[in-house]
Length: 259
Ligand code: BV8
Image 1: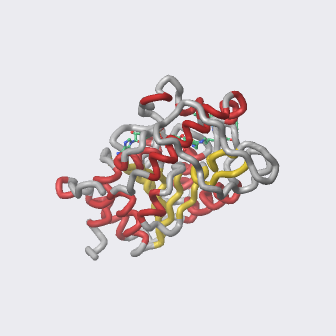
Image 2: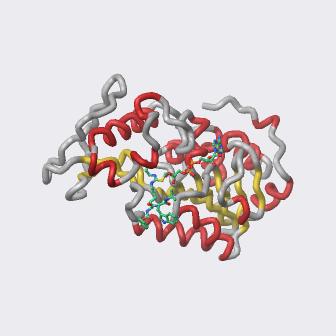
Image 3: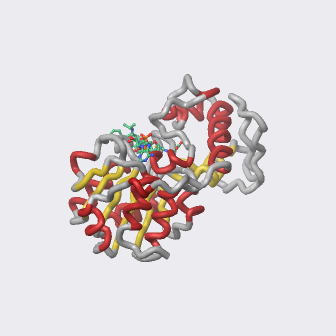
């Protein structure tokens, strides 16, 4: 778990006031939310075997069609990484906030770090890596997944017990539509929220990148927490250039009594 260094973080007063008076909160997260847990973002150069592939290229239905063994091995590497990291202080702070207010998480991340931190209401608009299913008949695949000791560049995916099709990770690939139930709920949540906190997303991938604008058009206050400017920075009410694991514990700690 991250070393607690919120002591040095000064929370903008306006953010504490807004957060303290907002009964219905949505936290919209991207890859930056899990960066301080040790998971690479989509902007970070991918180390090792896959550094010559852009994540976006590998995370696509066409890549799966062309080379399922390459795509499967990449997702197995990411699945194994996720299993060996822990939620950071930012994930924990959101879960704590959820015990004092109506807080829902809408995430683009395919990891389960929000749930492992204790967040009860998490909507995965881009799926969840561990929900393996058949790429042909969609049957869930619940068998244990063999993860090689060392990452390998190519690995044959398991075979579906129902139809013999190849098993794929439960994520939404570029060029694929988002799960209707998750998307519908995400739009409803940001449309009814008093406050939407956008954490660790570059705001480039659609339709998820359109959620902050929907929230604002429906009357929510929208704040952004990100060390860098993003494609949504121009349309939010406040941007706080800070990291997720430093900003969120300090923000929640500034209005929720310890405990
Ligand atoms: C679709 C799952 C119907 C898989 C993912 C409209 C305009 C233009 C293009 C389109 C459009 N509509 C559709 C498209 C096409 C495409 C798209 O958006 N392309 C983009 C690239 C231009 N969208 C789709 O294909 C979507 N499907 O629309 O279906 C359709 C189909 C075809 C054509 C028309 C319509 C499906 C998109 C979902 C793809 N699957 N993930 C997997 O994970 O492997 S997307 C994946 O990439 C992530 O889920 C995430 O959404 C995205 C990465 O973005 P971020 O999470 O924002 O992360 P990123 O690395 O970019 O940035 C990190 C940020 O964190 C940075 O800002 C950094 O500063 C910050 N940061 C770093 N450290 C920290 C931090 N912040 C805080 N703390 C820190 N410590």
